[in-house]
Image 1 (tube, rainbow, N blue to C red):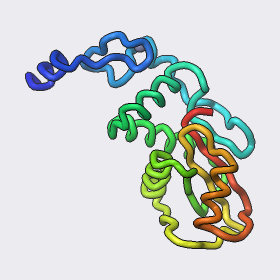
Image 2 (image 1 turned 30 degrees about the vertical axis):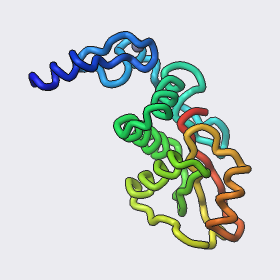
Image 3 (image 1 turned 60 degrees about the vertical axis):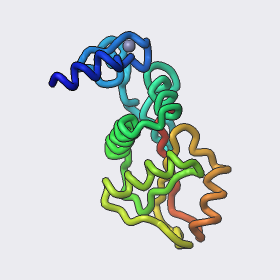
Length: 166
Ligand SMILES: [Zn+2]
């Protein structure tokens, strides 16, 4: 307890959105900003799920995650993405993969573990399978094409994508 107080005194944490100092119960956003961090209620499109809008605290969160590469923020990001996937994904998935980006790759691997799915390591057929691509920001088709040529062959039944920001 004393150590925690000392740590906060020595290294005060700031809200990722408005930079006001956080009190001990606040995690990464102050209470005022945290109320604006709300998961999107609908899919961006029929094939795209996103956690947050491209404005507000979600943007500040992603900026802080990218610049700090903090494990703590990464785990929070992962939790949001798993929750949103479970809320929005209608049909069972066969594969989770990611775009060509180390952080997206990490997220996809962790999501596979959390959802009890096996990892894809080698050239595998995705013919007639349902695939979801994970990306922090833009699960663009170009990056997916590169990834696909390395890992998969065949025409999938469905390709969806999930991103942290829409
Ligand atoms: Zn704030």
